[in-house]
Each structure stands twice: as C-alpha cells, then as structure tokens.
Length: 207
Image (cartoon, rainbow, N blue to C red; front, side, top):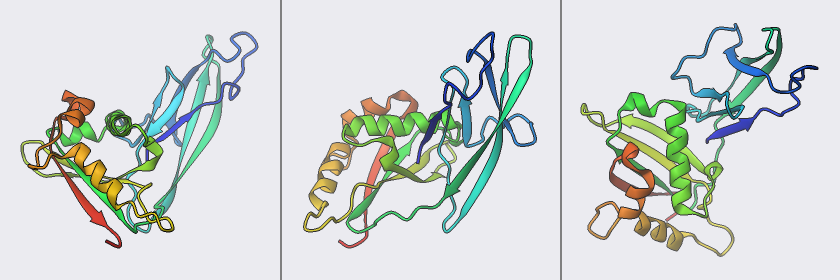
C-alpha cells in the first residue's frame, strides 16, 4: 500500500527559525538513500512516501535518520522506524486488476512513479482511496520495456448477504470495453506517463 506520512511541524524547533528548518532523510548509518529505494522524502512538503513490495509471509522493519539543519548548519536528529508486514486481506469475492503499461521497468520502480500511478487509479474510481489499493506485483513482460502492474482493491469482499460480484463487473466495464480494448477514460486518467495497452481483471476467492 502507498505510505504517505507528513512530519509533524513540532518535530524539530529552533529558537531563531522556529520550525523553518532544512530536513534531510538518511539511512540509519547516515548514508544517502538510493534513488530507487522504496521509501523517499519530499523535503518541500516534509513527507515520506513509498510503496513497499513485501514478500509473502514476511515482516521486517527498516531504520532511518531524519536530520534537521538550521541556517548555521547546526543539526538535530530523530530516528524513524518503519515496520512493514504482509497483511492478509479478505479474498472472498475479490479481484485483481493487471495493467500492462508501455513504461520502462526502472522508471516505474521509482517511489514517486508508483505513487502517481496509484493516486491516478484511485482518482479514476472516485470512491476508492489509495490506502484501499494494494500493489501486488510489478513484472517485466517485454524486452521493449513493457511491464505488468497488478493491484487489488481491498474493499471487494463478501459482507453478509451483499456480494460484490456486480461491483466487480461494473469496475471491469469502466476499464475494459466489450471487445477487450482499454476504455478511453482510464487512458486519460493515467496519462501519457502510463501508456496503458491492456487491462485484465481476474477474480479471486469464492466465485
């Protein structure tokens, strides 16, 4: 799932600059983060963001350091621990959505790219938030740079007597035309950055 966490304004304080400080996000050993690391820091908006890809049956934590600089380059530090786990979502009457994109694999692995993709998908569906979408996998499918991105909508499950089969069919019709082509609406929502070539909807759970 997409993680977005804004640093509270009162995390650091300087008598002269108050909270107007330069923040730098580093690994625990104070080395710079790799540009392709899953978690990144937006210094302008003072927020962490990223989509962790967690192996099945796996749980781990990562440690970082946030450093605040004032105008005199005096510093203060704060530790950040991110716990990542593979949560088990309800699968009954669920579905996965595979987007085949004409997007370079390396480009899509950037945290900002994954964030934009999930935000645009959530905006397209209107009633879905990014925290209800799980990015299951990102795979290369062609030497030409095409990839397959599989996501799951965690709100699709059987609740009491209400079966979401019809909702799944409705979501599919918004994405895919009867002849199997991609609907113009989702193409426009994803934009030229995510040139979508094909969308496949696969049911999961009890159908």
